Length: 382
Image (cartoon, rainbow, N blue to C red; front, side):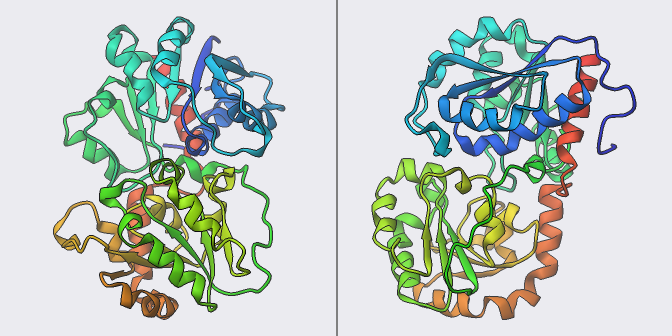
């Protein structure tokens, strides 16, 4: 498939396409590039971007000013948030009541595009809308909840890679309803402006534990890891946890606040930079467990160290494939030696990282949004 729309592909007789920006701000970089691509290539379409809070509205307003066919619309139950211009992850309105009240507006749309599963309750409960819903992926890798029955309610699934597509076909999804388009977030271009995070230049570690307790190192080892990284001075350290870790383990904010004053530590628990890829780009070494952020990190191969706090037999499972891309630590006493050896060990893992990222992400040079737009236009024509 070509990376953009073919000549004349934008002429599709107008109408409205709805994009749902109702969930956490972490979903925005997985969806907004498609809005931009579709707005540029299908100028006769009106693109309604439904937003749930004033934070979403403020972010999208900055980027949509030059897109005349994009309209920002407040979803029913829209929440005003203080300091909306900061881009921090806001408290969200109750999602299901919002979706119920949004249905009459979506009935008039030719298609509805979403990046999260909650919105798929609409076609799941109202099957006459099923063919109108397009679900694009957020994140990539083996931890995706592919068996959630709501995914079967989408008329079209846009996934990053052929490997990901195959996982759905093996679950009985019709081949024409699952398309591999590449990694959409790779086309997101509204990153937080680069700033000098540290006064002294050192190799930089990003610690990124998973937000679910059964998959995460945070609950068992997180505080010790923070203390160890705060006590050393060989590395700069970024602590920018997943938004949902802050929600599920709010004590993480207090733990990190205690070390935020150190010159080699940068802490961020609320800004948009946590989710726009800025910190992944700034780090030299990824330290984590099972967060899918590592897949995005490996789009540019770099050193990784994984912590196996639960002492699982990870090579016997199907969902820890990325742990083959770096040293795996099962004893906290081995953590600092592994980090100190990470750059030297990178030559062992570089080729595996390239192969893994290519397989998991598919196209990751920035063309995925155009491919998604092409699939949407083709669907509109049909």
